[in-house]
Image (cartoon, rainbow, N blue to C red; front, side, top):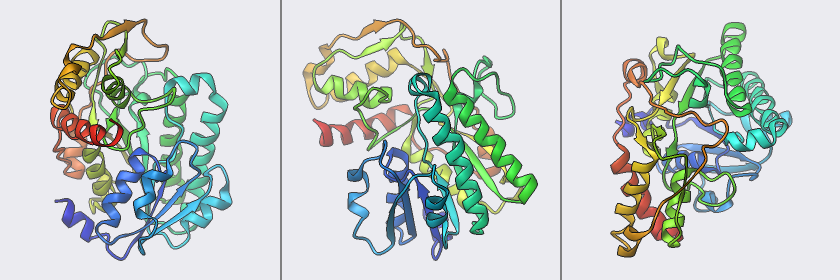
Length: 332
């Protein structure tokens, strides 16, 4: 199915903001491999040059080093572009709590700059990374797109504001967009280092180093962990859908199942022990829950199935096996 979607994009030029990041670089890899022209805009504040090193000499890839907080950089990147995949953002709930101003500058002002630049450049469709954090304190499971709660962090506020701006640009300027609410995405190239590293690469690196990973709380909190290839599929569907009802919507981008942090740690131990048997004996430690974290997250993917024909291929086990093999090869 992805092959057919990619064929429809031949001859188009696609801008990926934040292309040197985890999700952005996976999107670039898929597109350039199918001879689609890609422009990457990144300021390398969180993205890594090594994530795009393999693409730099390709004739269908162009890197623009710039910042979405600068409107001129956004305009330069959007020139001659048919579609935008907007992945650039400052992620992490804790980072937003520690520095709400920078998070807002990048995620709100930068997002608005990109909308304006894309609109003025005549971009056909703007697909952007939204977030499951938008559900906030709404406790019902599974999470359904039309029902959200109060945001629980500055980061969550910024991602909700993105959705509001995208909606206004449709109603005011007839500018088409699709928002993808990502749920705990994981996979190759996700950075295990730094204060705000995501839980899966962080745990993997700790196990490989024979260190005990630390779970916030008792391990009963659960997440809808979503392998990167499912996310790439959703982005391609959002770019290429010809269903007018599917446009100017937000969609949960997830697998539609949840795993507790304790279950996650044990799965990682099991899969990593296939490479190093001693890992199965490493203890798991616990500490207090983190401020701003929601207890449970589970997505309904019915809307994406109905309007975009979304069909995720990787459940948590299949995704972790792929991710663990990549990490073992690249960081052990």
